[in-house]
Image 1: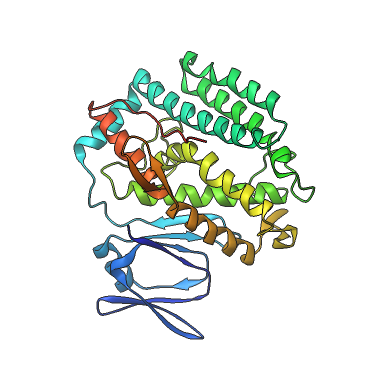
Image 2: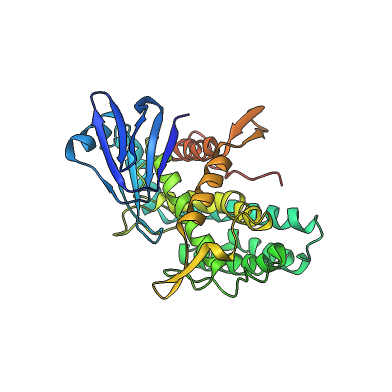
Length: 330
């Protein structure tokens, strides 16, 4: 699978014949174009139309983040795989309330079961999470009784709020206390890590959607409205617990990120560049990590699992097989 290039430095991205290079004050670094799937750009980077034309031709996405680490937007080349038939099926499953609630319920079920597996993992390692686990199970049992997406969203929110109460017990670090979920800007260090991690995952899933026949603008749990993309938010819900949350717990337990990696800005707490680089490096490693896949009988990476989830959704839309979300084994 092609790789993602992460750029934190300031400079210029340029095309030279059939290759790319990134130029900074320190010199040029050439980038083999055939190995690249997309760019995550955090630094101040200049580029021109000729470069963007080359990106379109090579079907490479550019994802931009601002100085504070917030996702700004994506240069999304003309969809080369979009299928009119699949888009019609996506719309049909959104407009038909029964079909939409069926898909949205599966997404929330997948998210909840992966949350429960994270809870179980840490409970087996001596963490006092019995009550939280029981509360989440009782909420899980209500998912299939939902008849409206708003009702389902409310239960999903309650599951997350209950799950977040486990974070302090799992992390056991007074420098990283949860309190409550806050966004834009996050009000403490732990919320800053969650926001940054979730943003990376949303963008990673968006990049995988581009490699399928699906349209990222039509989601099922998250309402399709004037927001640019929603399907990536849906699929991310399934993977947040096992990719982002587990990554955060690892970074903090190994002290790879500490309180010194944060700063006050914009009326909140944000991750400094050094912390962002550590997070991104470990995020990329996690996506490349392989696990045994029971159905396939072979090892696959987490990034491949995301793509497979999208293929399963395509099969559901065309009536080939019912969508079942990926559930981790631990």
